[in-house]
Length: 128
Image (cartoon, rainbow, N blue to C red; front, side):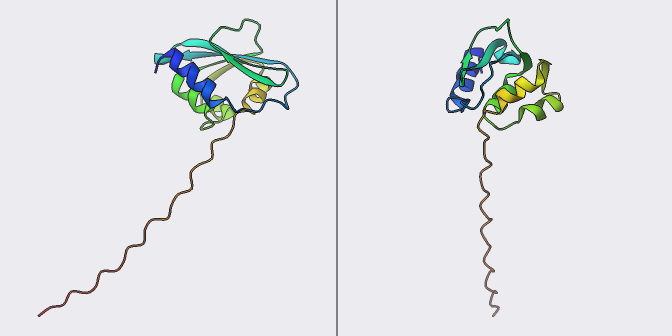
């Protein structure tokens, strides 16, 4: 996945994120390592989430991680605090603001597992 594909996927994943309850301004730069190397920012301003493929110099926090882990967080498959604790994503700056921004990410619900089909007992073989 390229940098531009990653940014587009993050934007798509967060298109329905509801930041309306966040009254403070939050700006987080995300530095991506690996194949999709680059930087983009996520900002909440006026209760609206913005994501753009630019550096954000006047940021509250900086997150650095592999593109796959960044995308997993954006898609709600991995919680940011867990990713930081596990060392998958590095963090600098205001931790509380980074977590507040991550709180608007819709959580992906695990698909309910279908019960395994019950096996029918085979009829006993008749012997002659």
